[in-house]
Image 1 (tube, rainbow, N blue to C red):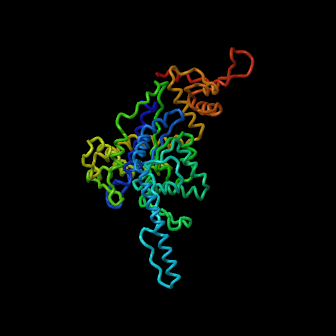
Image 2 (cartoon, rainbow, N blue to C red):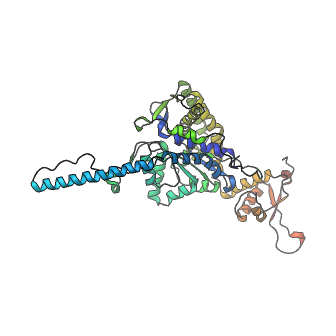
Length: 455
């Protein structure tokens, strides 16, 4: 494909992009008291060579291009603001002179006239950001009521940025992003803000980015369960086998920017979400899914159990995305959906149960294993893909193979080989080149049963 990566990355990254484009314009509610924005968070997991970044960029770049169009009138808005600001200064100056004169003469001072306070400076209309601080993200949300997309090439950097604040502020930053997933009200009442504190009615962000398996284990899945990992969907597809043809650079087979523009143009009366109800059939399908989730929770534990608890809410969110993906395929001017129907929720549930659940099992299971066990799994999958399966392995030689198992150091490969030896898949077979004297090679013999395995 055009990105030279598994298509899973492109399709999965599209979901938070669509959700952010709809944002606070449309929410969904299966019944009274339960409603969600359409945003989801997506972590694309894979090694550095997996092609995550170019795949994600295929769907994020059209949103960035649309942002430029949204600000065609920014210079005109800025000129209007500068005029209004200068007018306010003159009104304030005249009023202050009148107050001064009134005080001198013992008369009651006149009230502050309308238009004597400087207007807020206009912000550029934004749809996405890559590296906002918590304070900047808050201000962006206040200026862009529809919601936004956070796109990080490496999510590990975003998480490390929160932790870099120190324990207290890191906790505040994580709490901020947890709330940004919910779309609920955020009020900043800090002393330094004075009367200019930002009050965001619906703090709504979608998040998409890549992360390496090791960083997933050490950063997103470590420590106490504060709910951050449970608010992500995970995409961890098998890498493309062998050496593929060079990426042709072809874009998506449809004009994504035009479709995103239609979503951004959805009306938002009174700057509040329009909440779409579920049909009775859609409610019944969701109820059946909730019963299935309860059964799955009885066999789960740890972070995966927490993730399962978010699954019904994720289905509500994704139902809006799938509903409007169908609408986008209709001609412009077609009436937009007024309810979440059975087809939309069925597609959301199908994606979650058939794709997202297995991916989450892998993320929470494999990534939480000790490093040597993760590397052993990686090495065994690489070994079984070889045709023919080699008779011997050597840690230092494996490290230098262009399309090897992707384990970064010979020491880690050696530890993985010891793990495979415990399973009788390999055994130590030290030897010397040509049978002569000198330092022994650290070879490992592969179990002949694997070499006789059909390709």
